[in-house]
Length: 319
Image (cartoon, rainbow, N blue to C red; front, top):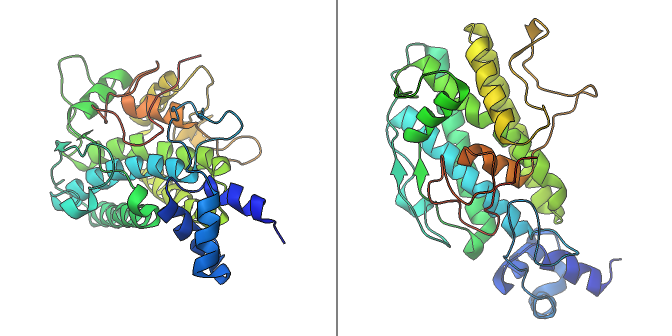
């Protein structure tokens, strides 16, 4: 059996307040300790600090960010993906009751329905939109009172900036991700690979097994989404612009060349993996480099013009 101090330590890192610690105790399978026992444990656990930067540092030099901080970082990314896909499919974003929480709640700039020409792509987009909506609902429910609100999100000008950085368009031109199916697929490609690497990078930081399993489940779904988008781009002969986007992501997240296009050595590369068949990871700071559209340390920019909400908010410095 684990002793009381071990349990206190583990659950303490999994929450940012007493209510969440009690909820996490139940979620982790400690409901048999009873209300009084859970209450006692909660009083013995100091609240996890929220002073964490995107580079993965914690105010406690011996511990990483709390599970709540990691899940809130993921929630910011899910807000972004949900808004993009919901607008593309329905012409509307998240309902107001799914955007509240800690931190400044921001609006959404841009977004409109895509006129899908093919039944398959329309159905792919709808399924992904429904999954991303479900992810937002799940993470908000799991975090309870610790959940962050939706930050300000730009899904209009940010795509133009990303397209210019990738060399898809020239300075002064505009990239509209909602104009046609190909534009939509290329825009989705910007997000999907980043989501997979973000969840893989976050996995070692999550100490509560219940939430680790949940994060693994979301990672698997994001990987399915990424493979769907990559396969469709390959079938449409869009390997060249996809490679440009891949190279642009690589230019933002550090000096190591990890990102892979949908064609490699002249062959299909639907699954970007290393020589061991493993997907690569990105730190939270590297993920923020991409969504902030900068290779430098920053706390806002790109798709999040006012930054993300929560403890993890600073991008990494380029190596």
